[in-house]
Amino acid sequence: MPIAATLPEPDAAARAHSAKVVEALSRRIAKAGGWIALEAYVRFVLYEPGLGYYVAGARKFGAAGDFVTAPELTPLFGAALAVEVAAHLRRHGGDVIELGAGTGRLAVDLLCGLEAAGRLPRRYAILEVSPELRERQRATLAQQAPALAGRVEWIEALPARWDGVVVMNEVLDAVPPHVLVRRDGRWFERGVVLRGGVLAIEDRPLADGRMRSLGEARFPEAIDYASEVNPAAEALVEEVARRAGEGTLLAIDYGFPRSEFYHPQRDSGTLMGHYRHRAHADPLLWPGLSDLTAHIDFTAVAEAGVRGGLAVVGFATQAGFLLSCGILDRLAAVGPPASADYLRAASAVQKLLSPAEMGELFKVLALSTDAGASGPGFRLADARRRL
Image (tube, helix red, strand yellow):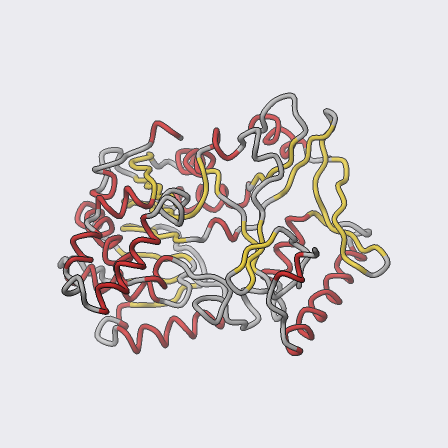
């Protein structure tokens, strides 16, 4: 059965938008000589001005969108994360910078948690590429935390130097990866072409020596294999690290250490689409309507931070991190165990912690200018040895 037949049907307006995306993409492919790397395709369908998934105004988060992130599940996620952020602000001082702030829900919860801890930053800066999401963030902050919204400002680029804490929650998975293929000992890059006016996947010989070196260093030996490498995500982390004065970077995302990411049995990569709360494996399905993400090689992210001058000061599963930050104590404070508020909160916390949901797949990585700056979130389960 075709993947599209198992998913909700887009309405007429959504289909019309996707058709516009395909038309513009077809021109881009023709201009490039008939083939573009899958990385360029993903970048186009996610971020092309006026057309891309993240910049064209479609609802992405929550029940009416395509996926739900941890902050959307419960404010207890941000309250627990604030424990870690507050510890680093006490050590470093400075501001909080959040990259890719979604609906603004995490900013609200972090600010409220930091206020409760007596560690409000002078400034909470948000770097957001989506105009539509910037407006949603402003509205969320104005409605949910009006007394704290004045501390928030939106920035267009990373500052030349930052001090404090940088938060990247589900940011790196949305950086378009290259997909490399080794078949019969030969190397290819996966890309997109037009065949009879229809988008299609096509692998072409890999000409980029640096990309091949990354594949050779990371892919398991002696088998046919396809997977992602993401030098752009690594470059982002390295650049953030190089601009650090005194501070800590916290990266929260789904992924694995390298030995698990490039496992021989994971031989088709991790690139997935997300549409109306359903995951699918066809990156060419409804361009502009479907989110596309790939898991994170946390070893590569850690190495990038070290190249930029930071030290790895913590690595844990999301479950271990949140438990260390006292999320169960915060859950107990919601209300009596039989109350509706408590039961709703408990259901959300279960999703955050369960190994079958987000607890094991999501990880938290801390990189700092201070090699001794391991925070409270890694007290119970620091897994740096796995990197």
